Image (cartoon, rainbow, N blue to C red; front, top):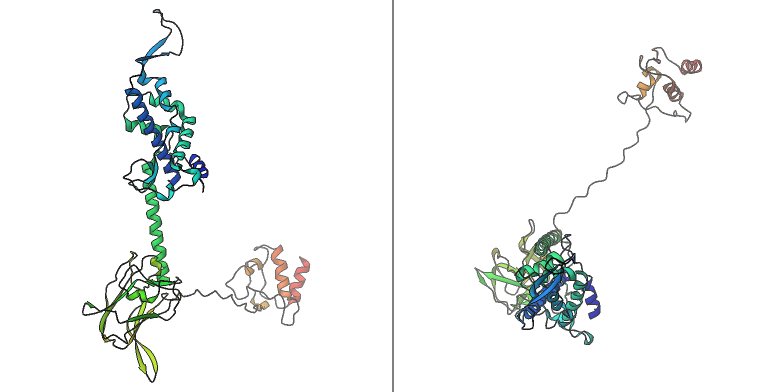
Length: 452
């Protein structure tokens, strides 16, 4: 991004913090540019007030312009320090005369325009292209022009007020008039709260990733073995991995180089091997140091195993395990974990195997509900009809066995009883229909239908 683009971005950066907009770096720079302007005004005003050339009095005509009995044309004599002339002379050529500023980091770690050499430079922002050799000062100049074009009358009124101190002067210009710094402390606190909330969410995501074993890699900075509290020297031990898939400079040899700033990153999530073929040792504990970044890559479950040779075959015998609950590996980086102890083991000439385990208890999948089996339709006999009940009542009662009627009989012919019940249920009310006790055949029911 060249100088012109950056200056343009600064000029159009959000100005009003009163509306509760989120604190942003451009907003901070615009606030800083406003404070530079205010302090430059104060410095130039001081020079003018201390100058021997200053006039004693300047006349200002009052609004009505009328003459009074003493011959004064409605004017009032004002001291130079409170005059419009002094305000104009203070701001004249002010924006183009700004120089000597660099982008630095203030005590809050925010970028700011400053001449204070004690503050650390934001070097990346001060290395400029050839056509932009005075970038920070140019940015301030452009912001200054923008401020003066929009708020010149208000700024002149503040300059003419010689009774306010310097701190109030800057506040009135940058917080009450231009509003670039309004609620800045509130916004800083809100931004800090947002950052803290983000960090908390990030930690929770890391924890979930470690617990679920969803990460694609794992990493460890240093590995340690000990006997009765005394750490074992691993100079003669060889560290390898079963995968061999490591970024350049991040292989298993870093696990025993005694440098916690290096690490072993395994992209295949395979076991680590420690060969004691040339080392003599008995151990009763082990631990490791977490790597420099990405806590979600920390192992939280593992097996530590020792090799056993039998008939030319190598088998692995478990020494100790941490599975459930998983170990609460700290989020802080470069931390040496507590010692994990076990019964002493002679590892001379043996191979130790650190096998990380990923994923916790398997989640039980919810079984899909099986669709209800369709039962064959219930057959209804004429003798099942209950006297004194209408067909509607009969059909709407799920408690009686003949609630469902078959539309067809076993031979596939339409069920006459179903058709009959369907017809009369549409035309008769509960009081109008009583099914007689002596209904025994379909002909009687069909005859009743014809009469209806």
